[in-house]
View 1 (tube, rainbow, N blue to C red):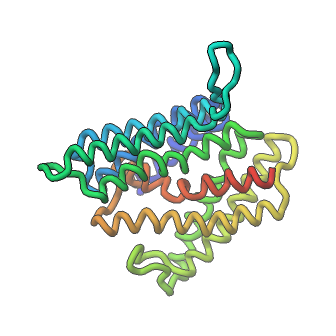
View 2 (cartoon, helix red, strand yellow):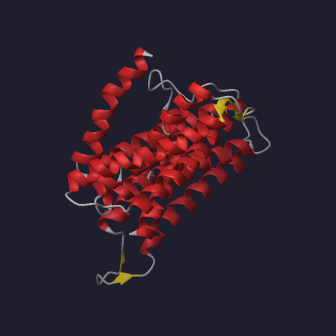
View 3 (cartoon, rainbow, N blue to C red):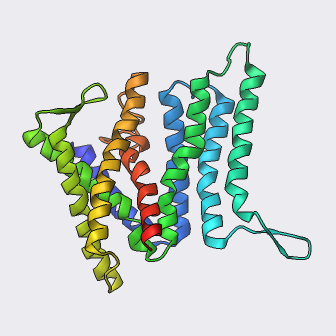
Length: 287
């Protein structure tokens, strides 16, 4: 417990510094590190980390993807002719990068097929998820940071997730009786899930109060606060259980040991990974 608390005492101020006070490129660097480490944790969990080419491709892609998101969102990637005229299709940079990565993974699998060290399909799918899907989802934090009121909006997924997780934990401990998903996460209860819904809303209320003070104006309506808090909490809990399914499938207790008392990056940011794209898309629709 002491280690868990100390990680929070040190980590939260650092997170505030990077996300809200440092330039957006600092958030990009943080996303690069989290995505690369998370991708390696996933490969290790499914037993694919011993495949060095697959690991190098996946971790490299996961680390590069936030850079592409940053360049596309902040500078705007454009394809230019020799005369300096803009060509259509600059927004295709990310899909092209993803395509090259997938081709590289399958080429690696083709060259090894039928030989010692052949690549199981489960390892390929873990590579694609770790190299593309996971970093794209988590990099929505970076997209929020680069948008309007970015220094506050970037906290939307974190406020929802941390609020939901905290209240779900204490509600489950206090009155949890009915199992939510016993085969996936035996300790989670329906009562804890309901507490998580309340926690998601409370997290949003607190963020709105702090954000309104920092910005000098209200940036969300009460309807938006409720929608983000309630729906975000549901997605938060789905995200948590989703990463637990992988751990159960492969008999892993924690994804890593980077954060003492918390586990690895995927243990701490599992639900945030799911909530981040939801918050980004809803903010874009409502904006």
